[in-house]
Each structure stands twice: as C-alpha cells, then as structure tokens.
Image (cartoon, rainbow, N blue to C red; front, side, top):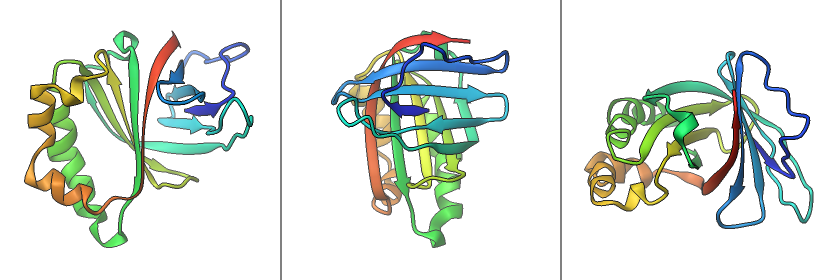
Length: 171
C-alpha cells in the first residue's frame, strides 16, 4: 500500500501484482495498494498538501474471504501494536474468530492480516468492502461484538483506522 501523493500513472503492476489506487474518505490522502505474489504490500503514508511519504512493507500472515477484491469499492485499514506477551493470543483471535466472522457479513468481501517487515505500527489488517457501512450493519455488529474481541481491542496500542474509496484497480 502506498499513501501520500499516490498516482496510478507509471505504476507497473507486473504479471504477479494487483494494484489499486484510493482516496481517503476522511482526508486529502491518497493511497496506492500493491499486492504481489511475494505476499507483501508497500505503504507510503502522507498527504497531498505536504507530499510527505514513508515506505513500509508488510508480509501477509492470513487471507480470508472470497478474494473478490475487484468487486470492492472501499478498503478499510486497521493498524496497531500490541504487547509482546499477547502476540500468540492476538494471532489466534484474528485467525480463528475475528476474520472468519467478519467475512460472513454482507458487504465485507475479504480480510487480510499483515505483519510489518519494516514499519510501525507492527500489525495491519485490510478489509475489502462493497458496502462502507458493513461493519455497522446488524450483522456486522454481531460479528464484531464478542467478549474475545472486546478483550483484544483493549490491548491495542497506537491504533489507526482509515477508510479508502477505491478509484482504480488493475491486475
């Protein structure tokens, strides 16, 4: 993923990559999301006004859903750190409960969990959405409101959440 003055012009995805550009629904930021066969995504955060950019690489840890990324209209991102002593439980929660429950919600097409190769926060979760309000739907609330989810979220540190409107996709 690339954030900042991201632009699709000149982006060459190659045969093994999926590329999307998006605009933040809350700010002037733009994003270029690159998924490659090497299971890494690249991020450059920043804003159009400042032109600041920072490159971050994340390795794919878990992918759940139908893979219908091309049908997604939105990308919802959650970045966080967690205490080192709960990494095993955090991984189990995401892989066993959280991601599988969320992809059953209408409008949530796919969910992926990443671990940073060179970035902070250390963890990134990406959700492909066909409906930006899917998390707040009755089904979304049921899927998200579990005792385990509440316990794990209380451990999040440096959490960042952002919603992106996909403006272009290329594979």
